[in-house]
Image 1 (cartoon, helix red, strand yellow):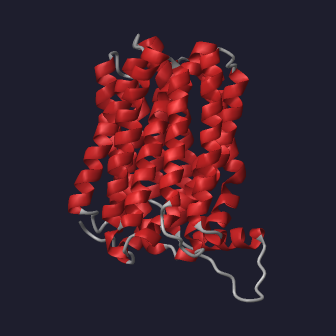
Image 2 (cartoon, one colour):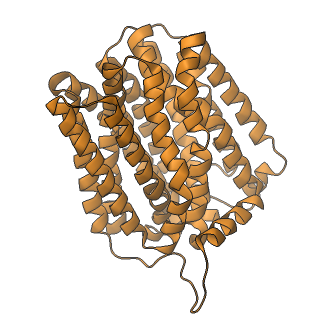
Image 3 (cartoon, rainbow, N blue to C red):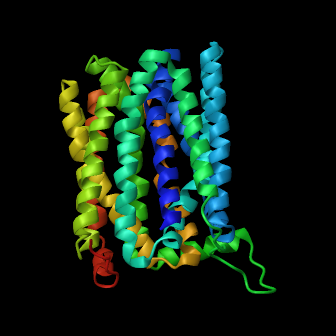
Length: 405
């Protein structure tokens, strides 16, 4: 389990830096240009880069040693964040610099995401996947949504956004070092002697595999439709909502994010002890539904503490659903296909998100922040119910069992 401990450490440190960035990036954008449209542009560029390269990242994570893919991606992102940190400290930072950094981050995520998601079964026994995923989603929310945002808010208030960006760069460097210490593993997909396959053929194979399974294509379709309603508005509108509607500052925004992080930690700890229900798909969609409606409820709040309560409940749902989804993929999808299927997962999750980032700011400027948040939350809940009711969606509940805690 030494290798998983190193992987766990890398994820924890990297997510701590990402938590700092989750406060630093929007705060820096709104300092340079107090406009949801500007934040939408930055977020849209990051997700557009993921969309453009994630299928190639999936092929790479199956054809090459996954730890090497992760290391390269982390080093690239460390360089990008470090450059922004220096520019912010020297006072030379402009909005276009943040746009470039966002695109580089998206490129890194496109390769690191499928590799991170598919390497876990190579590090732990099959019967410990639930515990491994729960361990990850104990530390990741703790770092990304709880400690990181609180640290980010404090750092920005005390030393400025430049130092916060440098902290994120350092976290990627430490994460890359930890991954480098993991023992070498062979590539998951090893071609037979004389076999020649193009990247396009590998991608087509993964599409065929997904198309034949309702629980896979149905959930990917759910991601395609719901995550743009959740991700873009959350990143663009929630910081604006806390700052302008609730009258909060960076510290208050960090508290809202941290409340969600605390909830995620508790949910992951509970799952690690009791395991996942036999009706795994039913549990997963119930949890996702609880998270998908959160923006509508945020819009009803009038104080920071109320937004913290919403974040606590919603993050519990998102964490439960994600742990179930990740474990199901790792148990049901063949190892030689897992990287590419995870890339399709990323593709579905990001395909429409750039559009969401682009239009959500102007839409909020036109219709108001609260009405747009309500509409996104309600639509997300409706799509979740429709996906769950697709014929054949729950067939896997009798075919794939997830190990209990």
